[in-house]
Image 1 (spheres, rainbow, N blue to C red):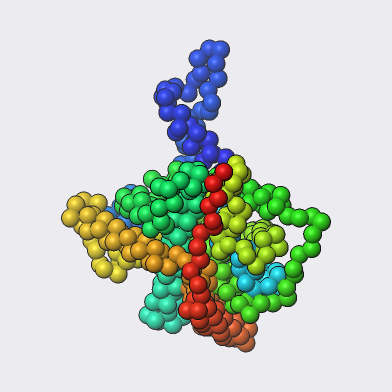
Image 2: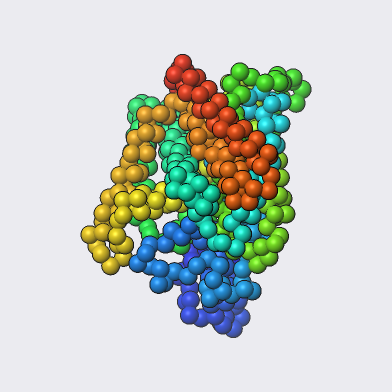
Length: 479
């Protein structure tokens, strides 16, 4: 992380002579650029993990001669694979995403006591099922989908791929809704609720956001988007800190809070909580990048515990401080007035916009493979066909987001129920039962529990959505 940050700063300060590594007498350079670049290029970066999403090789076929596999000693060297601490922080970056913003509403939907216990149970099951998948993979080098095929034939591969891709596409829809609502709220407040600002609708912001994302989606090599991941990570973790601070400052320390055991809509919490652990598919490449892969399990457990604690704190704070009226996006509940509120909203919007191309990339590659599109590096017709397919995908997802924006938390719950539970619980248990078969009773219990949870969460979300009222943006009050 330190090397990537310094290299990012050095790229920004591009006015200095990069060929000069020896400082002029009486001065000292910010950093030895050549040494830093060699060190930076030797380490697997976060975008490398996405290029090997769920153990798949997402390199364009025409670029395979240039692309070296993630774990190849030719690319990194055994001594340059990630250390335990680097793997730990990469896991944190993989798990923590936009889902944290929806947890306060999820805690209110589920009830304080049930949600607190449920978050810990889901964290345990997520970590345990990741270990199942990694253990089944062993030395075979198979991807997650490959394990599904080994366990259940072609239907197993299709089931895994459908769960993974639908999960990513659902996240992108959620990202579009989040950015549209948050940016529109900011614009209205900055314009002091003027007539032109109040005439803007989420659809207008969505169109502008879509126009920005379309050309970014044309990138073939995710290393070219490293600067976006750096910006997203800085904004994301700064925003989390400010959210916690804002919730604490809004709390009434002398008041009493309504602590509920469980709510009728508790199933919605389950879907959102499962979705919040976004990085399950990145755990295979993270282990493959580790210098000491035998330490993977304990590093994973530590990362899951830390993420679980963070999610519990934010969910409890938001639900207790803002009560049943907490918005589906906690940033809208924090309030739009003041420097902190504006900063949090802006930082998180930037983080989500920078993360969206990375989240959409696995889906783009899967669609291209399903359509049997040829490599486009040396074929301009094929390249622009792929660009058209990617652009169409982004436009369709943006249109779905505009249509469904009033019920974001239902969409999040459905994605978590259909895809998230399958990825994190049902499919790992099925794969372990078919491949290893060392604990058939527990595997079957976990598998059928996952199926039941998917049906319960999805059914509850659809029924509640059908009877719900549109959720307007917070009222804009001029100053």
